[in-house]
Amino acid sequence: MRFTGLNRQIILSMSVLMVCSILIIWIGSWTFFAIAFKIDPGMLSEPDDWSPSTVEWLWIFAITIFGLGLAAFFAIKLAARILKPINSVMDSVRRVAHGDLSARAFAGDRSLGETAMLVDDFNSMAERLQRAAKESETWNAAIAHELRTPVTILRGTLQGVVDGVFKPEEVPFSSLLAQVEDLGRLVEDLRTLSLADSGYMQLRMAWTDLTLEIEEVGRLLAPDMEAAGFSLRLHLSDHPVCCDAARIRQIVLALLDNARRYAHPGLLRVRTRVQAGQYYLSVEDAGPGIADDLAPHVFVAFRRGDSDGGDLHAGSGLGLAVVEAIARAHGGSAACTRGKAGGSLFTIKWPVEHGATPPVG
Image 1 (cartoon, rainbow, N blue to C red):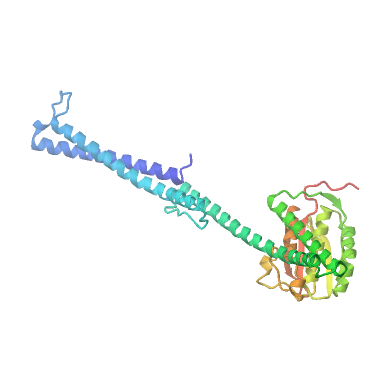
Image 2: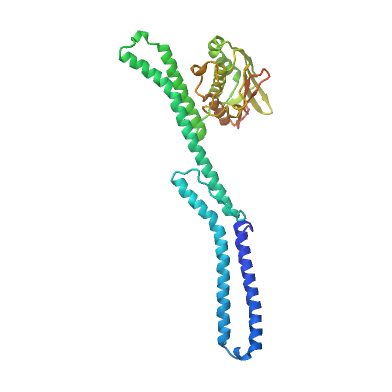
């Protein structure tokens, strides 16, 4: 048994109680018999008497009552020290159960290690619950906001066709299709984040040369990137890496789309390299870069910077959160720093092997 915390306090309290009781009985008895013998020896029982005298019975009764009182005093003091934080936890639990997630318990005397740990664990749990509730409210409001615009456009256009305001041949179906595609991407991003947060994101890991995958993404986005004034430069390593190629393509798509929406037109560099057993994938734009106050939160869902195009070209605010979630699922991480050209430099890294056996040959 560890001689710390609550165990230590109980042992010390009981030890002090026993020592005090023994000293009081010993000193008190010596004093009592000395005084009684000096006043009237007849008050005391004879050496051959089996039964104490009346005065001795009174002394035994008095010292017993005093001992019980002393024990009760120590027990009440110790119980109060132990029960104070426990009662605080009980009261806070009751408040949390009634919806007050701001309730916190107080440890009081932290020398009682176990009760202090109980209070700390409860407060930590309450903080997580409160943070989760706030995040849930934020997510619900953000999702409703993101869904409102495309749904309103689709409903308004279709209602106009039904009411005869628009003729079917006048409806901009390409614009409506773009809204539906945005909705599809939003749903897929939400699904990806949900799977990542719950730990159920399934990766199809295989040894892959990402050169072909990234070049294919570049060809796919080339028309839109060139139309927006961007020039794509690839500096790719042919070193094989164990990853889910589809998820890595999703990362590259998200990073390039983020640059198209928020960066100034210019050169976009995509680099891959291997260093110290880590595979690095980076995307660097020409500016203006991420604001210092936004940089620490750039991978948080629904956090967006300002785009020159306004709300029309703004994304859902989930792309970079999806990038970070996929990186974590690969056992890696995502970072955003300022590049040499003054723009944003997004770097994704994960272990080259990631628990897999290197390919032979």
